[in-house]
Length: 148
Image 1 (cartoon, rainbow, N blue to C red):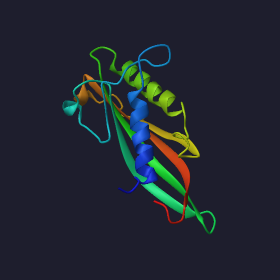
Image 2 (image 1 turned 90 degrees about the vertical axis):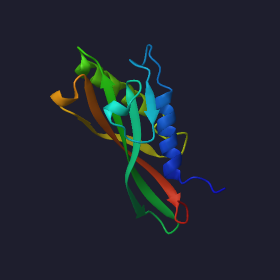
Image 3 (image 1 turned 45 degrees about the horizontal axis):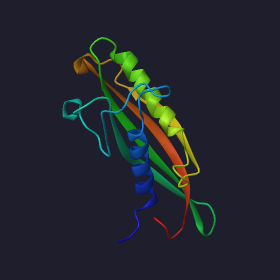
């Protein structure tokens, strides 16, 4: 069987890292569910929910044999709380960012990871008592020209 592309290996590591978050001195919440896809709030079994989604990939030639790759990854999240959903939302975002920077090389697969954007549902009334966020990452790594 062939080896998974580096992108898929990195995405699997992102999901695995989110699964290691545990309530305690560093993190506010233990994830209720982590998936490699997006879910609507009514599909989530336990909160907070984190979904890992691949996005745009750019590949620029670095040398005759190497390519620089920028992989965009979006971590979507749903939280649920009756009274403090905005506070819970911001704490869940903080948990995700702390976990990302725990090892931004993803066990040596990447050169650097940057959080480039954080977006929320801006307190949409229609989702109460749920709240939604997206944390967008740019993960940079280098490949041989013939690698995937």
